[in-house]
Length: 449
Ligand code: ATP
Ligand code: MG
Image (cartoon, rainbow, N blue to C red; front, top):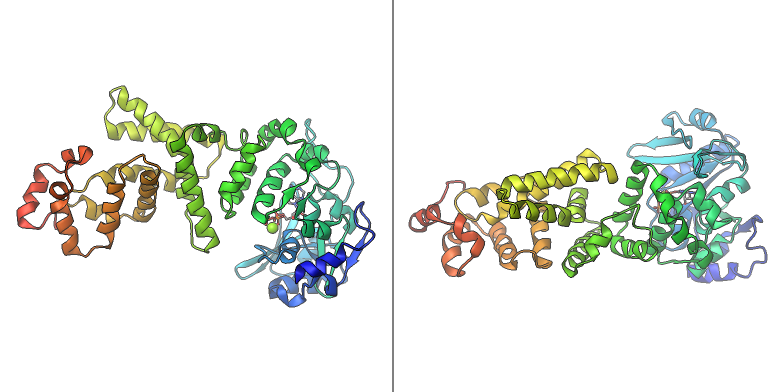
Protein backbone atom coordinates (compact mmCIF):
# COMPACT_ATOMS: atom_id res chain seq x y z
CA UNK A 1 0.00 0.00 0.00
CA UNK A 2 2.75 2.31 1.01
CA UNK A 3 4.42 1.61 -2.30
CA UNK A 4 1.33 2.84 -4.09
CA UNK A 5 1.45 6.13 -2.24
CA UNK A 6 5.12 6.56 -2.89
CA UNK A 7 4.65 5.53 -6.49
CA UNK A 8 2.42 8.51 -7.01
CA UNK A 9 5.03 10.75 -5.47
CA UNK A 10 7.37 9.73 -8.25
CA UNK A 11 5.14 11.72 -10.56
CA UNK A 12 6.06 14.96 -8.83
CA UNK A 13 8.03 17.29 -11.01
CA UNK A 14 10.42 18.85 -8.52
CA UNK A 15 12.45 15.93 -7.26
CA UNK A 16 16.15 16.53 -7.08
CA UNK A 17 18.38 19.56 -6.73
CA UNK A 18 17.26 20.86 -3.36
CA UNK A 19 13.79 22.29 -4.09
CA UNK A 20 11.30 22.04 -1.21
CA UNK A 21 8.66 19.45 -1.99
CA UNK A 22 5.72 18.93 0.37
CA UNK A 23 4.38 15.41 0.30
CA UNK A 24 0.88 15.13 1.79
CA UNK A 25 -0.53 12.30 3.89
CA UNK A 26 -2.58 10.81 1.10
CA UNK A 27 0.66 10.21 -0.79
CA UNK A 28 2.98 8.92 1.92
CA UNK A 29 0.44 7.30 4.22
CA UNK A 30 2.20 7.94 7.55
CA UNK A 31 -0.39 8.95 10.14
CA UNK A 32 0.56 10.85 13.22
CA UNK A 33 -0.58 7.96 15.41
CA UNK A 34 2.22 5.75 14.05
CA UNK A 35 4.59 7.76 16.25
CA UNK A 36 5.07 7.20 19.97
CA UNK A 37 3.67 9.82 22.33
CA UNK A 38 7.08 10.99 23.54
CA UNK A 39 8.12 11.87 19.98
CA UNK A 40 4.85 13.69 19.35
CA UNK A 41 5.10 15.59 22.65
CA UNK A 42 8.53 16.86 21.62
CA UNK A 43 7.48 18.29 18.26
CA UNK A 44 4.12 19.55 19.60
CA UNK A 45 5.65 21.49 22.48
CA UNK A 46 8.33 23.05 20.29
CA UNK A 47 5.72 24.08 17.74
CA UNK A 48 3.47 25.50 20.48
CA UNK A 49 6.45 27.56 21.64
CA UNK A 50 6.63 29.06 18.13
CA UNK A 51 9.45 27.00 16.61
CA UNK A 52 9.56 24.71 13.62
CA UNK A 53 9.97 21.06 14.64
CA UNK A 54 10.02 17.87 12.64
CA UNK A 55 10.75 14.19 13.07
CA UNK A 56 13.80 13.68 10.94
CA UNK A 57 16.34 11.20 9.59
CA UNK A 58 16.24 7.44 10.08
CA UNK A 59 12.79 7.36 11.68
CA UNK A 60 11.04 8.89 8.65
CA UNK A 61 12.97 6.62 6.30
CA UNK A 62 12.09 3.54 8.34
CA UNK A 63 8.39 4.46 8.54
CA UNK A 64 8.29 4.85 4.75
CA UNK A 65 9.91 1.45 4.41
CA UNK A 66 7.29 -0.03 6.72
CA UNK A 67 9.85 -0.72 9.46
CA UNK A 68 9.80 0.00 13.16
CA UNK A 69 12.12 2.98 13.80
CA UNK A 70 14.77 2.40 16.41
CA UNK A 71 14.85 5.95 17.66
CA UNK A 72 13.14 9.26 16.96
CA UNK A 73 15.21 12.34 16.29
CA UNK A 74 13.80 15.84 16.04
CA UNK A 75 15.15 18.78 14.04
CA UNK A 76 14.07 22.27 15.01
CA UNK A 77 14.62 25.97 14.38
CA UNK A 78 15.13 26.47 18.15
CA UNK A 79 18.71 26.77 19.46
CA UNK A 80 19.88 24.23 22.06
CA UNK A 81 19.31 26.80 24.83
CA UNK A 82 15.78 27.50 23.59
CA UNK A 83 15.00 23.77 23.43
CA UNK A 84 16.33 23.33 26.95
CA UNK A 85 13.99 26.09 28.18
CA UNK A 86 10.96 24.35 26.64
CA UNK A 87 11.71 20.99 28.30
CA UNK A 88 12.41 20.89 31.99
CA UNK A 89 13.75 17.33 31.71
CA UNK A 90 16.44 17.92 29.11
CA UNK A 91 20.17 18.47 28.86
CA UNK A 92 22.50 20.01 26.30
CA UNK A 93 25.20 17.60 25.16
CA UNK A 94 28.02 17.29 22.60
CA UNK A 95 30.86 19.44 21.42
CA UNK A 96 31.37 18.47 17.81
CA UNK A 97 27.63 18.80 17.34
CA UNK A 98 25.75 20.42 20.20
CA UNK A 99 22.28 19.04 20.68
CA UNK A 100 19.65 18.45 23.37
CA UNK A 101 18.48 15.22 24.92
CA UNK A 102 14.87 15.43 26.04
CA UNK A 103 14.09 12.72 28.58
CA UNK A 104 10.85 10.81 29.04
CA UNK A 105 11.50 8.09 31.59
CA UNK A 106 13.60 5.52 29.75
CA UNK A 107 13.13 7.23 26.40
CA UNK A 108 15.38 9.93 25.03
CA UNK A 109 14.55 12.15 22.08
CA UNK A 110 17.54 13.78 20.42
CA UNK A 111 16.71 17.33 19.36
CA UNK A 112 19.10 19.12 17.03
CA UNK A 113 18.98 22.65 15.72
CA UNK A 114 18.91 23.03 11.91
CA UNK A 115 22.56 23.06 10.80
CA UNK A 116 23.74 25.95 8.68
CA UNK A 117 25.83 25.77 5.56
CA UNK A 118 28.39 28.15 7.06
CA UNK A 119 32.00 27.15 7.61
CA UNK A 120 32.47 24.08 9.70
CA UNK A 121 35.84 23.59 11.43
CA UNK A 122 37.84 20.94 9.55
CA UNK A 123 41.22 19.27 10.02
CA UNK A 124 43.99 19.08 7.37
CA UNK A 125 42.31 16.17 5.61
CA UNK A 126 39.03 18.10 5.31
CA UNK A 127 37.36 16.14 8.13
CA UNK A 128 34.76 18.14 10.06
CA UNK A 129 35.74 18.42 13.69
CA UNK A 130 33.18 20.95 14.79
CA UNK A 131 29.99 22.25 13.24
CA UNK A 132 27.73 24.40 15.31
CA UNK A 133 26.47 26.99 12.88
CA UNK A 134 22.71 27.16 12.70
CA UNK A 135 20.71 27.53 9.51
CA UNK A 136 17.42 26.88 7.75
CA UNK A 137 15.66 23.59 7.20
CA UNK A 138 16.99 23.56 3.64
CA UNK A 139 20.57 24.01 4.88
CA UNK A 140 20.01 21.23 7.38
CA UNK A 141 18.80 18.85 4.67
CA UNK A 142 21.90 19.53 2.60
CA UNK A 143 24.21 18.65 5.48
CA UNK A 144 22.67 15.23 6.01
CA UNK A 145 24.28 12.24 4.36
CA UNK A 146 21.88 10.32 2.10
CA UNK A 147 18.72 11.50 0.37
CA UNK A 148 16.65 8.89 2.23
CA UNK A 149 18.00 10.29 5.52
CA UNK A 150 17.09 13.89 4.76
CA UNK A 151 13.31 13.72 5.13
CA UNK A 152 11.33 15.83 7.61
CA UNK A 153 7.97 14.68 8.94
CA UNK A 154 5.65 17.25 10.49
CA UNK A 155 3.31 15.32 12.81
CA UNK A 156 0.81 18.16 13.21
CA UNK A 157 0.22 18.48 9.45
CA UNK A 158 1.09 14.85 8.66
CA UNK A 159 3.33 16.05 5.82
CA UNK A 160 6.80 15.10 4.67
CA UNK A 161 9.19 17.81 3.49
CA UNK A 162 11.67 16.46 0.92
CA UNK A 163 14.49 18.54 -0.63
CA UNK A 164 16.54 15.84 -2.32
CA UNK A 165 14.19 13.27 -3.76
CA UNK A 166 14.51 11.04 -0.71
CA UNK A 167 10.98 9.67 -0.93
CA UNK A 168 11.53 8.67 -4.55
CA UNK A 169 14.79 7.01 -3.56
CA UNK A 170 13.06 5.03 -0.81
CA UNK A 171 10.69 3.78 -3.48
CA UNK A 172 13.56 2.91 -5.81
CA UNK A 173 15.48 1.33 -2.92
CA UNK A 174 18.35 3.59 -3.79
CA UNK A 175 20.98 4.93 -1.44
CA UNK A 176 22.43 8.16 -2.83
CA UNK A 177 24.68 10.74 -1.22
CA UNK A 178 23.54 14.35 -1.14
CA UNK A 179 26.08 16.60 -2.91
CA UNK A 180 29.43 15.45 -4.29
CA UNK A 181 30.19 12.06 -2.70
CA UNK A 182 33.98 12.40 -2.54
CA UNK A 183 33.70 15.79 -0.80
CA UNK A 184 31.19 14.40 1.68
CA UNK A 185 33.43 11.42 2.51
CA UNK A 186 36.41 13.69 3.04
CA UNK A 187 34.34 15.70 5.51
CA UNK A 188 33.43 12.51 7.33
CA UNK A 189 34.85 9.15 6.23
CA UNK A 190 32.41 7.28 8.50
CA UNK A 191 29.75 8.09 5.89
CA UNK A 192 31.29 5.32 3.75
CA UNK A 193 30.63 2.81 6.51
CA UNK A 194 27.14 4.19 7.06
CA UNK A 195 26.37 3.75 3.37
CA UNK A 196 27.27 0.08 3.52
CA UNK A 197 25.59 -0.60 6.86
CA UNK A 198 22.33 1.14 6.01
CA UNK A 199 22.19 -0.37 2.52
CA UNK A 200 22.70 -3.90 3.91
CA UNK A 201 20.25 -3.36 6.73
CA UNK A 202 17.51 -1.78 4.64
CA UNK A 203 17.99 -3.75 1.44
CA UNK A 204 18.94 -0.64 -0.58
CA UNK A 205 21.38 -0.48 -3.47
CA UNK A 206 24.18 2.04 -3.22
CA UNK A 207 24.09 4.38 -6.19
CA UNK A 208 27.17 4.01 -8.46
CA UNK A 209 28.31 7.64 -7.92
CA UNK A 210 27.97 7.19 -4.19
CA UNK A 211 30.06 3.99 -4.29
CA UNK A 212 32.69 5.10 -6.72
CA UNK A 213 35.02 6.96 -4.31
CA UNK A 214 35.09 4.13 -1.72
CA UNK A 215 38.20 2.49 -3.01
CA UNK A 216 40.25 5.65 -3.27
CA UNK A 217 39.08 7.17 0.00
CA UNK A 218 39.02 4.06 2.22
CA UNK A 219 42.43 5.00 3.76
CA UNK A 220 40.79 8.12 5.28
CA UNK A 221 39.13 5.84 7.81
CA UNK A 222 42.52 5.65 9.52
CA UNK A 223 42.04 9.30 10.56
CA UNK A 224 38.81 8.65 12.39
CA UNK A 225 39.09 8.47 16.19
CA UNK A 226 38.90 4.84 17.29
CA UNK A 227 36.02 5.50 19.69
CA UNK A 228 33.88 6.72 16.81
CA UNK A 229 34.83 3.71 14.69
CA UNK A 230 33.93 1.50 17.59
CA UNK A 231 30.47 3.08 17.88
CA UNK A 232 29.93 2.43 14.19
CA UNK A 233 31.18 -1.11 14.57
CA UNK A 234 28.67 -1.76 17.36
CA UNK A 235 25.85 -0.46 15.18
CA UNK A 236 27.01 -2.69 12.36
CA UNK A 237 27.43 -5.82 14.46
CA UNK A 238 24.05 -5.37 16.11
CA UNK A 239 22.13 -4.31 13.02
CA UNK A 240 20.69 -7.80 12.51
CA UNK A 241 22.60 -7.91 9.21
CA UNK A 242 26.17 -8.04 10.42
CA UNK A 243 27.31 -10.81 8.09
CA UNK A 244 25.92 -9.09 5.00
CA UNK A 245 27.44 -5.78 6.16
CA UNK A 246 30.89 -7.27 6.68
CA UNK A 247 30.85 -9.01 3.31
CA UNK A 248 29.88 -5.80 1.60
CA UNK A 249 32.55 -3.86 3.49
CA UNK A 250 35.09 -6.38 2.29
CA UNK A 251 33.86 -6.22 -1.28
CA UNK A 252 34.21 -2.45 -1.18
CA UNK A 253 37.68 -2.62 0.41
CA UNK A 254 36.47 -0.65 3.43
CA UNK A 255 37.30 -3.22 6.08
CA UNK A 256 41.03 -2.53 6.46
CA UNK A 257 40.73 0.46 8.74
CA UNK A 258 37.63 -0.89 10.34
CA UNK A 259 38.13 -4.57 10.92
CA UNK A 260 41.69 -5.41 9.93
CA UNK A 261 41.43 -9.06 10.99
CA UNK A 262 38.77 -9.84 8.45
CA UNK A 263 41.17 -10.82 5.65
CA UNK A 264 42.96 -13.20 7.93
CA UNK A 265 39.78 -14.82 9.18
CA UNK A 266 38.45 -15.27 5.69
CA UNK A 267 41.68 -16.78 4.41
CA UNK A 268 40.80 -20.26 5.66
CA UNK A 269 37.51 -22.12 5.24
CA UNK A 270 37.43 -22.80 8.97
CA UNK A 271 37.90 -19.13 9.83
CA UNK A 272 35.17 -18.10 7.44
CA UNK A 273 32.77 -20.73 8.72
CA UNK A 274 33.48 -19.72 12.30
CA UNK A 275 32.85 -16.02 11.70
CA UNK A 276 29.84 -16.62 9.54
CA UNK A 277 28.22 -18.93 12.07
CA UNK A 278 28.88 -16.50 14.91
CA UNK A 279 27.48 -13.50 13.06
CA UNK A 280 24.50 -15.30 11.56
CA UNK A 281 23.60 -16.56 15.06
CA UNK A 282 23.75 -13.00 16.31
CA UNK A 283 21.75 -11.69 13.36
CA UNK A 284 19.05 -14.30 13.94
CA UNK A 285 18.80 -13.51 17.63
CA UNK A 286 18.50 -9.79 16.96
CA UNK A 287 15.81 -10.30 14.39
CA UNK A 288 13.94 -12.52 16.84
CA UNK A 289 14.30 -9.76 19.45
CA UNK A 290 16.37 -11.97 21.75
CA UNK A 291 19.21 -10.55 23.81
CA UNK A 292 22.74 -10.85 22.49
CA UNK A 293 25.95 -10.45 24.38
CA UNK A 294 28.51 -8.05 22.94
CA UNK A 295 31.17 -10.04 24.81
CA UNK A 296 30.21 -13.13 22.81
CA UNK A 297 30.41 -11.28 19.51
CA UNK A 298 33.84 -9.81 20.27
CA UNK A 299 35.03 -13.15 21.60
CA UNK A 300 34.07 -14.63 18.21
CA UNK A 301 35.72 -11.89 16.18
CA UNK A 302 39.05 -12.30 17.93
CA UNK A 303 39.11 -16.01 18.80
CA UNK A 304 41.19 -17.13 15.85
CA UNK A 305 43.82 -14.58 16.85
CA UNK A 306 43.87 -16.08 20.34
CA UNK A 307 43.99 -19.64 18.98
CA UNK A 308 46.90 -18.81 16.71
CA UNK A 309 48.85 -17.22 19.49
CA UNK A 310 47.96 -20.06 21.90
CA UNK A 311 49.06 -22.75 19.43
CA UNK A 312 52.39 -21.02 18.88
CA UNK A 313 53.06 -20.84 22.59
CA UNK A 314 52.16 -24.49 23.13
CA UNK A 315 54.40 -25.48 20.25
CA UNK A 316 57.18 -23.54 21.96
CA UNK A 317 56.71 -25.70 25.05
CA UNK A 318 54.55 -23.46 27.26
CA UNK A 319 51.96 -25.22 29.46
CA UNK A 320 48.42 -25.03 28.01
CA UNK A 321 46.69 -22.89 30.65
CA UNK A 322 49.40 -20.27 31.18
CA UNK A 323 49.88 -20.22 27.42
CA UNK A 324 46.17 -19.46 26.91
CA UNK A 325 46.22 -16.64 29.46
CA UNK A 326 49.33 -15.13 27.91
CA UNK A 327 47.76 -15.39 24.43
CA UNK A 328 44.62 -13.66 25.66
CA UNK A 329 46.63 -10.84 27.24
CA UNK A 330 48.63 -10.32 24.09
CA UNK A 331 45.63 -10.25 21.74
CA UNK A 332 43.80 -7.95 24.12
CA UNK A 333 46.68 -5.49 24.29
CA UNK A 334 46.87 -5.21 20.49
CA UNK A 335 43.12 -4.89 20.09
CA UNK A 336 42.84 -2.27 22.78
CA UNK A 337 44.65 0.11 20.48
CA UNK A 338 43.04 -0.94 17.22
CA UNK A 339 39.43 -1.47 18.19
CA UNK A 340 39.18 0.40 21.50
CA UNK A 341 36.85 -2.22 22.92
CA UNK A 342 35.51 -0.71 26.14
CA UNK A 343 36.34 -2.58 29.31
CA UNK A 344 32.82 -3.83 29.99
CA UNK A 345 32.79 -5.79 26.72
CA UNK A 346 36.44 -6.78 27.00
CA UNK A 347 35.91 -8.43 30.37
CA UNK A 348 33.03 -10.58 29.15
CA UNK A 349 35.02 -11.52 26.05
CA UNK A 350 37.97 -12.70 28.14
CA UNK A 351 35.76 -14.67 30.50
CA UNK A 352 34.22 -16.55 27.59
CA UNK A 353 37.66 -17.46 26.28
CA UNK A 354 38.98 -18.50 29.66
CA UNK A 355 36.03 -20.84 30.20
CA UNK A 356 36.84 -22.86 27.08
CA UNK A 357 39.43 -25.26 28.54
CA UNK A 358 37.06 -25.94 31.43
CA UNK A 359 34.58 -27.56 29.05
CA UNK A 360 37.19 -30.23 28.42
CA UNK A 361 36.96 -31.35 32.01
CA UNK A 362 34.08 -33.73 32.45
CA UNK A 363 35.14 -35.43 35.62
CA UNK A 364 34.38 -34.96 39.29
CA UNK A 365 32.84 -31.77 40.57
CA UNK A 366 34.22 -29.55 37.84
CA UNK A 367 31.35 -29.78 35.32
CA UNK A 368 28.90 -28.93 38.08
CA UNK A 369 30.92 -25.90 39.05
CA UNK A 370 31.10 -24.79 35.45
CA UNK A 371 27.31 -25.00 35.13
CA UNK A 372 27.03 -22.48 37.94
CA UNK A 373 29.35 -19.96 36.37
CA UNK A 374 27.48 -16.75 35.49
CA UNK A 375 29.02 -16.92 32.01
CA UNK A 376 28.16 -20.58 31.43
CA UNK A 377 25.58 -19.81 28.77
CA UNK A 378 27.83 -17.57 26.69
CA UNK A 379 30.73 -19.98 27.15
CA UNK A 380 28.60 -22.91 26.04
CA UNK A 381 27.27 -21.04 23.00
CA UNK A 382 30.85 -20.29 22.12
CA UNK A 383 31.81 -23.94 22.53
CA UNK A 384 29.03 -24.90 20.06
CA UNK A 385 30.41 -22.38 17.61
CA UNK A 386 33.82 -23.99 17.83
CA UNK A 387 32.25 -27.39 17.21
CA UNK A 388 30.27 -26.20 14.18
CA UNK A 389 33.40 -24.80 12.58
CA UNK A 390 35.22 -28.10 13.18
CA UNK A 391 37.74 -26.72 15.63
CA UNK A 392 36.69 -29.22 18.33
CA UNK A 393 34.69 -32.49 18.37
CA UNK A 394 30.96 -32.03 18.06
CA UNK A 395 30.69 -34.78 20.66
CA UNK A 396 32.01 -32.44 23.36
CA UNK A 397 29.37 -29.81 22.60
CA UNK A 398 26.66 -32.50 22.50
CA UNK A 399 27.77 -33.79 25.89
CA UNK A 400 27.33 -30.32 27.38
CA UNK A 401 23.97 -29.91 25.69
CA UNK A 402 22.77 -33.08 27.37
CA UNK A 403 24.49 -32.42 30.65
CA UNK A 404 22.92 -29.01 31.26
CA UNK A 405 19.40 -30.26 30.58
CA UNK A 406 19.72 -33.50 32.56
CA UNK A 407 18.58 -33.97 36.17
CA UNK A 408 21.14 -34.63 38.83
CA UNK A 409 20.99 -38.42 38.66
CA UNK A 410 21.47 -38.33 34.90
CA UNK A 411 24.35 -35.92 35.27
CA UNK A 412 26.10 -38.22 37.70
CA UNK A 413 25.56 -41.08 35.29
CA UNK A 414 27.02 -39.07 32.45
CA UNK A 415 30.14 -38.41 34.43
CA UNK A 416 30.50 -42.06 35.15
CA UNK A 417 29.74 -43.58 31.82
CA UNK A 418 31.14 -41.02 29.47
CA UNK A 419 34.64 -42.46 29.05
CA UNK A 420 33.64 -46.12 28.77
CA UNK A 421 30.51 -45.73 26.63
CA UNK A 422 31.86 -43.28 24.10
CA UNK A 423 35.12 -44.96 23.25
CA UNK A 424 38.57 -43.42 23.28
CA UNK A 425 38.74 -39.68 23.76
CA UNK A 426 42.20 -38.38 23.23
CA UNK A 427 41.81 -35.18 25.18
CA UNK A 428 39.56 -36.45 27.91
CA UNK A 429 41.48 -39.54 28.86
CA UNK A 430 43.88 -37.51 30.91
CA UNK A 431 41.37 -35.58 32.91
CA UNK A 432 39.08 -38.55 33.51
CA UNK A 433 41.77 -40.65 35.10
CA UNK A 434 41.66 -42.16 38.56
CA UNK A 435 39.22 -39.78 40.24
CA UNK A 436 36.66 -40.61 37.55
CA UNK A 437 36.90 -44.27 38.32
CA UNK A 438 36.31 -43.57 42.00
CA UNK A 439 32.91 -42.28 41.16
CA UNK A 440 32.13 -45.16 38.85
CA UNK A 441 31.13 -47.43 41.68
CA UNK A 442 29.95 -45.02 44.28
CA UNK A 443 27.70 -43.12 41.87
CA UNK A 444 28.57 -39.82 43.56
CA UNK A 445 31.40 -37.57 42.57
CA UNK A 446 32.20 -34.29 44.25
CA UNK A 447 28.95 -33.71 46.08
CA UNK A 448 28.13 -30.62 44.08
CA UNK A 449 24.75 -31.96 43.11
P1 ATP B 1 19.96 4.11 12.33
O1 ATP B 1 18.80 3.34 11.86
O2 ATP B 1 21.21 3.32 12.40
O3 ATP B 1 19.72 4.91 13.59
P2 ATP B 1 20.10 6.71 11.18
O4 ATP B 1 20.16 7.18 9.75
O5 ATP B 1 18.93 7.15 11.98
O6 ATP B 1 20.25 5.15 11.15
P3 ATP B 1 21.66 8.10 13.15
O7 ATP B 1 23.07 7.90 13.51
O8 ATP B 1 20.60 7.86 14.15
O9 ATP B 1 21.42 7.17 11.88
O10 ATP B 1 21.54 9.55 12.55
C1 ATP B 1 20.33 10.26 12.42
C2 ATP B 1 20.38 11.16 11.18
O11 ATP B 1 21.46 12.09 11.28
C3 ATP B 1 20.64 10.41 9.87
O12 ATP B 1 19.47 9.88 9.33
C4 ATP B 1 21.25 11.50 9.00
O13 ATP B 1 20.26 12.35 8.50
C5 ATP B 1 22.07 12.29 10.00
N1 ATP B 1 23.44 11.80 10.08
C6 ATP B 1 23.94 10.85 10.90
N2 ATP B 1 25.24 10.66 10.71
C7 ATP B 1 25.61 11.51 9.73
C8 ATP B 1 26.83 11.81 9.09
N3 ATP B 1 27.94 11.16 9.42
N4 ATP B 1 26.83 12.75 8.13
C9 ATP B 1 25.71 13.43 7.79
N5 ATP B 1 24.53 13.18 8.37
C10 ATP B 1 24.45 12.25 9.32
MG1 MG C 1 18.67 6.81 14.09
